[in-house]
Image (cartoon, rainbow, N blue to C red; front, side, top):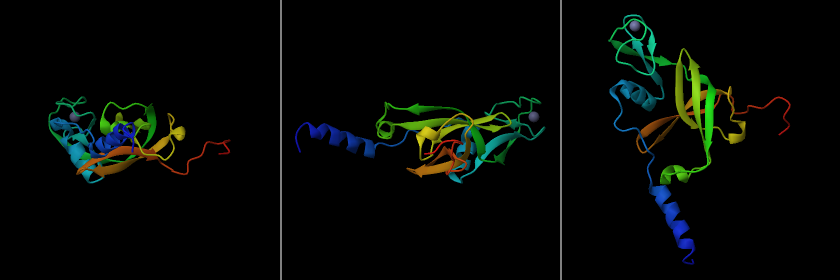
Amino acid sequence: MTDQQRPASSQVTQAQQATRAYPHPIAPGFADFFAGLADHRLRVRLCTRCSAIQWPPRLWCANCGGDDFGGADIDGRGVVHTFTVVHRGFDAWFSSRVPYGIVVADLGRGIRLTGNYLGDDLERLRCGLPVRARYETMDGRTYLGWAPAQMAWHTPGRTS
Ligand SMILES: [Zn+2]
């Protein structure tokens, strides 16, 4: 190994040892959501007075002004509302994984959730792509991601 190779090897080691960033501290309104991810469920706030979904969580119900909330599991299917493909990382963990996609999925009823794109082909990522929630667990935490609803998804008219 030459001296010029050592920095690259050192960077790989740093990336492998790096941990993924996680929201900290988690705002109280989001605690149930993150706890649900650990069970592979999408859990949102529901107003106990009028049953309106409160997403993102608020102190008061936007529909009736109530301040008492419960939780509701929602279906993990949606469509890509918008996305980006990241080619440069500013953190050791993320920079070791570029390029990667970040998706904002629209689940309807005013619910949009962000997560990494977990499909096998970034070229397929597009707005309107049907996606399903997928869960990645690492370092004792579970993260939300989005994969094509049908992994064998094909563009009509495309041959490859
Ligand atoms: Zn309400």
